[in-house]
Length: 132
Image 1 (cartoon, rainbow, N blue to C red):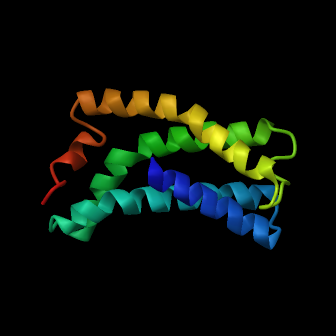
Image 2: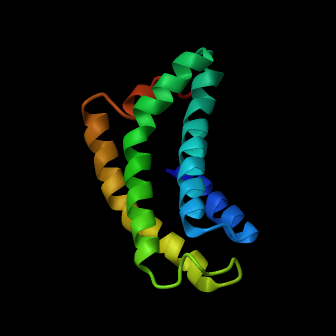
Image 3: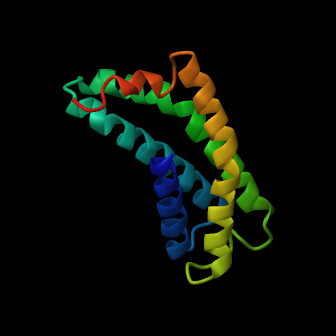
């Protein structure tokens, strides 16, 4: 979930700096959340000698559900906070709305991850590649 958070924040910050419309801001944040999330999952898998194509599939299988939940909850929260999307990087509302959205999204994403892991799916697939 760290990669997701990093990507989301980077996407929101880039779009805000360039003054891009809210739709583009949300799209970029979601795109980078998935990109960073998958990349952080793939790093140890690739380090274990798994080919890129197979590592990509493992990352997709392990992270798609939790990143989707995190992004849906966080972005809905940011959308309902008046003025959050129009806040600048120097505005506390920009930062606390993103952080609060992640805090709220953490619980359902964790529940989904635990459910998947208990069934041998999600991050359970990645665990075999850690520590190699």
